[in-house]
Length: 192
Image (cartoon, rainbow, N blue to C red; front, side):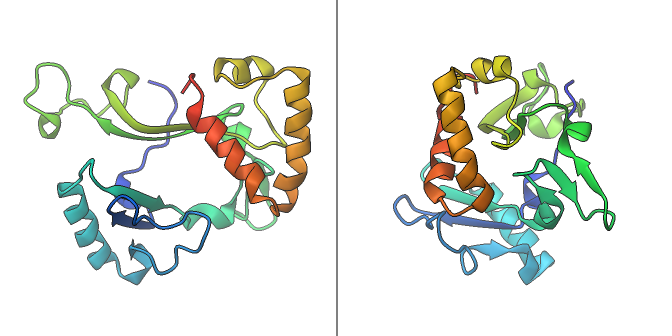
């Protein structure tokens, strides 16, 4: 069982369900979109439970998770502010980059009557049905070259120069294009 930090889906801070073509723009504000936990935990819990009972492949689901953002500096690959004045390198807790961010369903063990009858609570890879899987790292702290190759990311000298050039936009966060390109590259790699 690999080292993992798991949270149930209701740990998300916000969610929105839409028909195709009606989903919110991810480059704009999500402030007035969907249901937010900060608007009341009881109402949020009821709405999340109802949404989970009616999950459909004909809908677009948007989830936001911002609660720990004041403590997480992904660009510099550090935890900050958990203890005032203290910073901690992500790698001390997670190992070397990348960090895999996933959404999965835990399937029932063989021979059981279904997921609700599952007695084995381990989150082993053989029991996970992935819906979303992305490798995350900072341009300032990229994974070793061999790791990049295993993810299907070109690590030739030209690509490394391009990653270094992209780092300037990552530092200032003024270029959305650089982030969009990186996200699309991560989600389309054959290693994920």
